[in-house]
Length: 396
Image 1 (tube, rainbow, N blue to C red):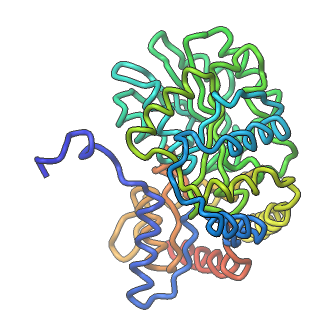
Image 2: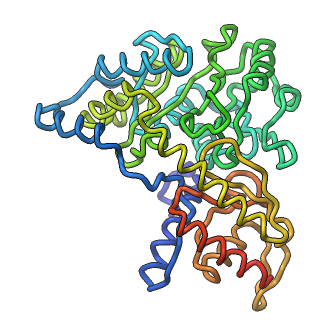
């Protein structure tokens, strides 16, 4: 391993992908496994989007495209930002990428270097930390627990800012907690950033269409900080297009063009066919995919009711995404068959082998006394998996 770079050796594996791999391995061994580890809608891509892709193939959209995307794709993103978020971006401020994950990585690599501090509200999405570390930055963690609905206050945020702070990265609706920042809460955050003009913010809005509390407010809508906010979105969650790999940003022109430079060197544009399908999705009224949100909301209620029947498990009521992030402190330190459960990963491994339910350790998101349960699964699987979890936890 010594021949590998120190950077890649220090890079952690995505815990969500690792648990998904464990699920596949257990299934291959013949176990009846239910996988609730991945954040992937169990719906298929809507037919009108697939139709646009078929038409693009037939029309021979099979050549290189501009790195930030076709112009009419950028125009579709521009209209979407205006229609849904009240944000005005020029075409030179819009870049399409191979998934929102690449969009975030592009921005991190464009902004962060050795000596820069990056504030991550905890819990955070697993890849934020590893991206910052790979870029040479230093992560500063600011935690908000279940009693705070996992939302870091403006006061806590400001207390963490130093002259070395370069960037803040957060998601709303949040992966893994499902928490949604309200307009008033974002207004308080915006006031903090106005007082600290050296700080930039990545606002990850990939779960925008899974907000059960109403319209999703955007941090970039506050004019005083607009040019220091990078708005990230994509189609994987709201349009059930995880495999299509499409994400995009709105950012000030200097940042957007830096992203184009970076992307041009290691992937160029995302798939030409995906881009044509994305135009159809972005031009559609969000009500076209409302049925997915309605179903996830129904499943949330089922999952919360069943999880509420497990003694020792503590849950809040998430306002968005499709995750529940229970506190599991009561089960840590327990022993089963001579093996002590020290942390959230031990607990998840126990549930994988004892209950054959695969979920994600909270330690991957910065909170080791939690686990993340995805309810992007059928009602049958939700009911059966929680029954198994309850039975397994009662043995501890």
